Length: 125
Image (cartoon, rainbow, N blue to C red; front, side, top):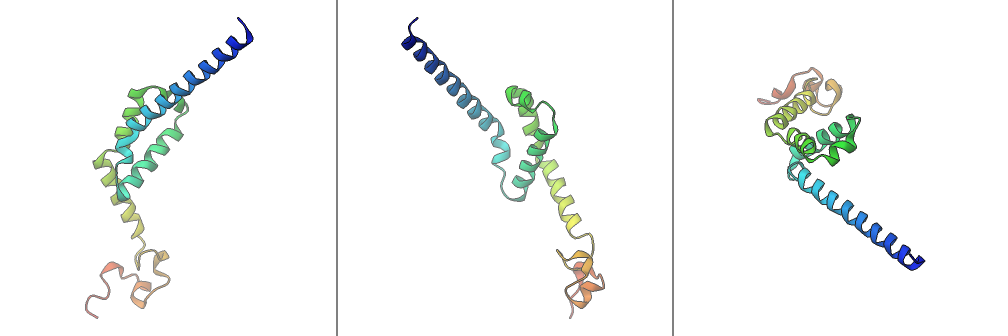
């Protein structure tokens, strides 16, 4: 083989490897699309859960290469019942301390919020 032929075969093998990588990325994009199609707070929760699931596993490379494993992880992250429960937990934790939302335990805000009257204050005043 001449050097020109060797260079041509190297270039061809690089192109084939690049095409395989692109095809793999397209397959991953199709598989992950149920999570990416979620809108609003559920979409954010689904993407966070997918990222956490993939980062917590030791062999995340194996998950990306095996479509069935990736589909299971994506299905678990995009499950509507589970997303609704996660959304309820987040909203409950946000308003747990009493007082006005986003103020730590009602320390600032109005007089009733500082007393810890919760969401019902100010209805008849």
